[in-house]
Amino acid sequence: MHVTVDRGRCDIHAQCVFEAPAVFQLDDDDELVYDERPEAVHRPAVERAATSCPVAAIRISER
Amino acid sequence: MRRVVIVGAGPAAMSAVAELRRQDYQGSILVIGAEPHMPYRRPPLSKHPLPTSHAQLALDQAGRAEATWLLGRSAHHLDRQNRVLLLDGGDEIPYDGLIIATGVRARRLPGRLHQGRPEVMTLRGFGDLARLHGRLQRVTRVVILGAGFLGSELAATIRRLGCSVDLVERDRLPLLGPLGPVLAQRIADEHRRHDVRLHLGRTVDRLHGTDRLDAVRLDDGTTLPADLLITALGSIPETGWLAGSGLVLDDGVRVDNTGRAAPGIVAAGDVARWPHPWPAGESVRAEHHDEAVAQGAHVARTLLGDPAPYAHTLAFSTHIHDMRLHSVGFTGKNYRLHVVKEGPGGRMLAEYRHAGRLVGAITHGYIRDLTTTYRDLPARSCHEPSATSPVHAGQRAAQGAGGRGCVEHA
Image (cartoon, rainbow over all chains, first blue to last red; front, top):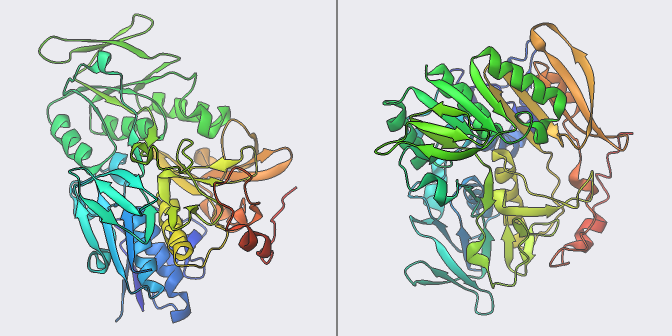
């Protein structure tokens, strides 16, 4: 599973941090940092995060 | 169960479709949506920059293949006895399992005021946004009635496009109810700093202009020149089609703590009213995108025979001018606000308390603190089965779900 966040779209609504805190976090400046290649066990949470994102910034692919 | 019907085609429906298939449900899924669009995200509709295409807002298109989508059609009546749904136009749709996800509609100005004028509009769906884009090409003076989240976000967005904006609010501050006086005052200051003219404690009592709108008169006699009036007066759950169905309708569809409204019927998203014994009320109906997503998935599992108490933390964000507010849990004037920390540029983190107990938190600029310190607040796992719930089938599950326990924050 490969996760990408479109930085042009991301507006730090932070819903992904609530839904999948093991994959998405905020740094000291409240900027988003994330694991591009999370373990498969996180897939349901990552999918929830992608759907919850109000600006559709999260993409999941299988590469 | 071989035939699931979902009424409403928004985020809750899309999420329910995905979860039904994830749980290996093999039967048919029919989704009936009043709007002609596939499910999309509403939060960007009022924020800068205004979206210009449905594709920018669309939810995962994978769901398209997982269900049959009947769009531009509405449910008209629910016959629970025969497990049949009647559509506008008379079609009868049988179901084994029903998911109610019809959402809300915008509350409009009384007809005697707007008189069908095309320069009076609201913003609820993608169709409204297309109309707004058309109008904004031609106007310079905009009046917005209602300074809640929608009205305040729109005021900021439209001001940024260069139009003059008058924002009219019945309450004494914008967003006083949902944020409380301290933050509401900051929102008011923020509007004024960006030259949005506030008219507080006022409402609209007359529209002027013969061929087209040219002014809006307020109830104190003030006349505001205007080419466009946008109403942002809150919303009303879409439950008219459920009249006479026997379901409990009470500003939304009442569900138990698993999402069930009746045997074989669940509800999710903006239209669903869930039991919630604290902090202050006995039930909650939330109009949040991520709640619709979480609830849609949850009630799909309930419908498939795996009812569990719903335990999702409310989370919300809004952008108004340069203020970016994020909150979790319960906020508003009914709770006591306690500022935890403040920093340069108006950054702040604050907690809301009720009877000494932490019920929510809000921030401008300390989002990480919010996502780490408060992410389980207030845990809905504290759910008690509601005495007013129409069905009690979920009670055993609720009582047995002690694992997560009650998160108490004294």
